[in-house]
Amino acid sequence: MKFFIDTANLAQIREANEMGVLDGVTTNPSLMARENIRGEEACRRHYVEICNIVDGDVSAEVISTDFEGMVREGEELAALHPNIVVKLPCTADGIRAVKYFSQKGIRTNCTLVFSAGQALLAAKAGATYVSPFVGRLDDIGEDGVELVAHIVQMYRYYGFETQVLAASIRHTQHIIRCVDAGADVATCPLAAIKGLLKHPLTDSGLAQFLADHAKVNG
Ligand code: E4P
Image (tube, rainbow, N blue to C red; front, top):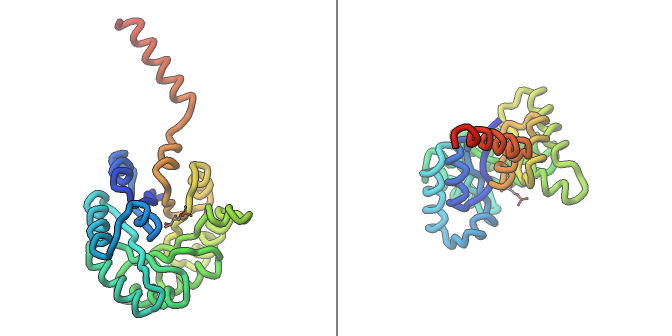
């Protein structure tokens, strides 16, 4: 199970990386805008900065919606750093672009996936990662983790190599349920990763150990 952080915030990426458990980063245009990164040049510099922090795959998403634009943008992004994974939306043009990049040996992340059918097409096109959006499905009354489990089962049955990257993770329980569902990767906000550490018995146990030590050692 790999852990990616789902942010473009450099401080958070550094903090997660320093924990020693980070395998990669996912970004999207909304996350880049949240960091107020404007213009193509600034975006490119930011992706390179992220790649210089984390030794793992960094998803950088195209803005174009047509095949030619996706190919042009994706090639530019892939040339920035060997760790860049080109993130493409799960549309007809996006799937075509996934196929194009997979034939060229460029890694892709097929994003905005909300159904098993979309995940099937992404895998057939040769996506490196497929990103089902767990939280956004929960938001509309569906079960996002159930979709993750369905995709995992389908990929195993047919032997697809595409990795299931559980995205739109909102909290720690999502991570645990995605582990149970067999996801290859979960991309998470920093708070959800840190939430995995929290247990009141760890805190009270540590306090007791330190108190007992202090009684004897002063
Ligand atoms: C995934 O790669 C997306 O960037 C992300 O997980 C979307 O999450 P959200 O639904 O919280 O915006």
